[in-house]
Length: 220
Image (cartoon, rainbow, N blue to C red; front, side, top):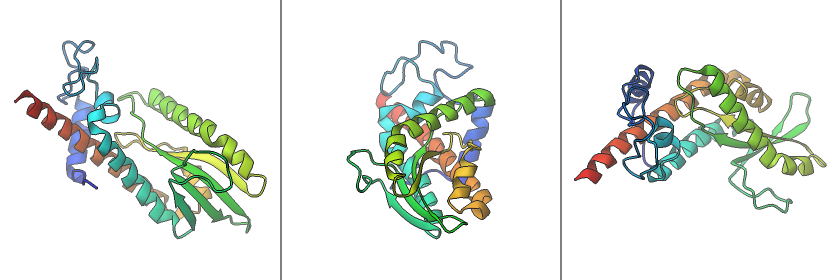
């Protein structure tokens, strides 16, 4: 797996985002923000969200970012339950593959199953309300997607479909906390928040840097 930039580079990238000084054609300070196409895929508008989450030139890096966050979460869960990664759910006639199927014991001694997808939506920079709304939509669609499977599995064991959401710029969705608490990770929450958010941010910084480098190569 290709490695992301360092944490220091990630934080420098984040500060540049906040200042609006990134070299993205459709940044807030660009003179023609609505008509500047992506330098790689020629999409109609090269926004930061397009670069980090939609330009197909970086599909392998999206997967790297997703899998790095997922693997860190799997490592934490492994001490509290059993985890199946990216597999069809046994006993269910469906081709869907949740990122994680987790079987864990609850404090009352009962067992619970969780279907969790790791999701990395783009934030609305400077607008916390719109960012949370985007996170809520992403979580809703994951619940809708895997809800029927969870319902079928609930006939034999309590099952919940949900998501682990971290923004592309390292924003933590507070609705992750009750999910992780139910997975037995309450004491690890501060460390997990920091680690997963930093992973998202450093990978996104790497994607941005690669985007600029590939754009320069294309001009030659």
